[in-house]
Length: 391
Image (tube, rainbow, N blue to C red; front, side, top):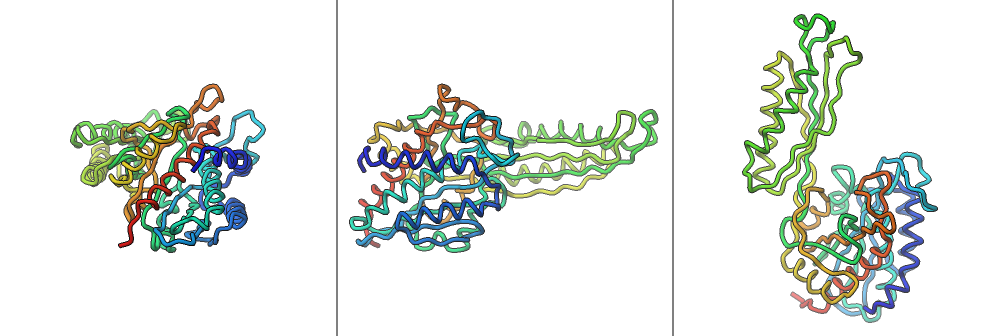
């Protein structure tokens, strides 16, 4: 791959990313996005399957020479956030925006499709392009795409996340665990409501809920091995209707993040016990709904090493070793099936207002990162194909 080839593809990446940014669709609702992607893939010369695992799209570019099947994945869904940016490509859908870079992932992978579409005569094997729906909402789109055969015959898989916490021109990954598992839980506390001036005649669900929030914070600090990173976060607590009424019901919800399956099961057991016993201590009852989400994302060592070797040769994307991070990704499911590597590609640049965190109403990215991501993915695929030996 020559740098000039990416430069030729880059303007179309920007145009497509901005189109998608103006027209975001939520998880499990990516109908128009899928149609848009499928149309461009056909124009690039790919064989196209639609409605894979829901609104997923699979593009296949088969070379004239024998070789491996290299899969590359991009996610397509947006978030229920109001876009507060002031730019010409601002979201036109009220309350919905691409606040995590998935529009950039999709645009970059479409650029990869165009690149390989022109290389069929010299291509050894198959490039399989996975455009996945519903990464943002469990159970996610990866499992459904796998069940629909997206990974059949695949030898290796790569994916990237355009990442504003690191500057454009850099990239980061690591062998082994890179991103945390994620679970969610919801607790409903049932007390006995009454007059705010007569608390002795009631069972205050809000007081029980407040105590529960504090008790849950002791799980990581006192039950989990200090050498195992873990997080228990309470994201919301709701209860009551007025200042002088003791609430009969209180609801709270949270998330659990960790990298160790043993710790993951321990935390679930401890949350179950703490919820039951804390509610009982205050004379209340509690019900717990616990949802297991994405597993820990674990990169293959060989493919992580390939990333560092390839990226070192690309003068536009300096590689760094990433520390494990607590956000989760359902790309983890693909890595449970085939070897591969997931990579963070720097997209932060304060000079271009690309400095807000992911999932922020003013989130944006330095679009040059899309060219860097496309070049990296192409180089990884070409490296694997060059070294591949038939079994």
